[in-house]
Length: 390
Image 1 (cartoon, rainbow, N blue to C red):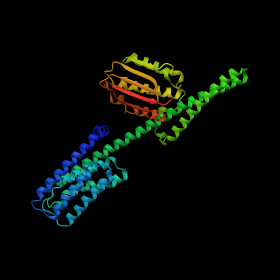
Image 2: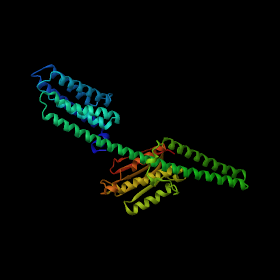
Image 3: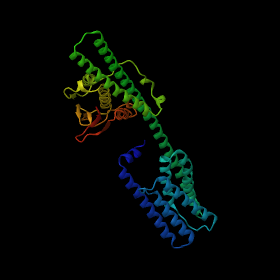
Image 4: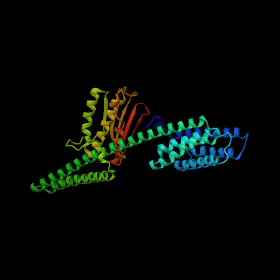
């Protein structure tokens, strides 16, 4: 995604105001052309003026009016007037610069946002309409060449941005699918662990003479393990059902293996290793959290902390301290990772990555019914906050 598109997505209101300002400028240009051409008024001049006003109004981001409706209306209006003037009485002087620029704005938006089939039809109509606008004049001259070149450049650049956006969507989908498969593997291991515990407890109760109190204790552990296994299995089935069938695009590196599922105990070792080579890490884990936290939630918390520390090592070159906190909140488990870095590290293109790590962690958190946010902290630095239901 281009820097301009990224800025527009982060500041939608400002982007709408800029588009509205552009349309007002185009309307002013069309009005100026109409005033100048009014020295020799005629029906063709009135048609050109009306067409310019309508097309410029269509380029404005009106609330409630979709882009495609405005673009189809603009294409129909400009081509109707163009054909009437070319095959009818052509006026002596027609500029049409404001209308042509408005068509370029609509062309860019349609090629970027419209469905592929619609863009393949509507895009050429708008581009050719922009090229044909100067032909209305009795002496089109260099203006026809100017707007033809502009239409080709705008169309090529918009298609390039569209291809980049589609490529990023495919990569994000592959990352999310890989995270779901990895989480499904972890849940499978946890279910197997609980079932194994149930079998062991049942065999102990069967082959060992136990009293009523001891039997009640064993049955309680079996009931707890069975409930956790059923809960993990439901989450596993839910994740597999939500998978959109793109597992074939998942990287081969995420093939299930026999490595044990990491948890809160591994976070302490992880922070110690990070502190040995990077800024010191202050870790806070709520007392008693390790004993009452389900295994799949602990594994997800470990992966989030791992990704956050990896990003700090890559992008927070000036960080002097890292704070990690895990505590229970009404919504479940809250995981917070904050640093005080201000400037990114200088990395090669291969080391920078594609920015998909946090997207994968967000997918993992959402698969469990939670959420993850990342952004600048109010006191400075960067803050990653995840909430996982328990």
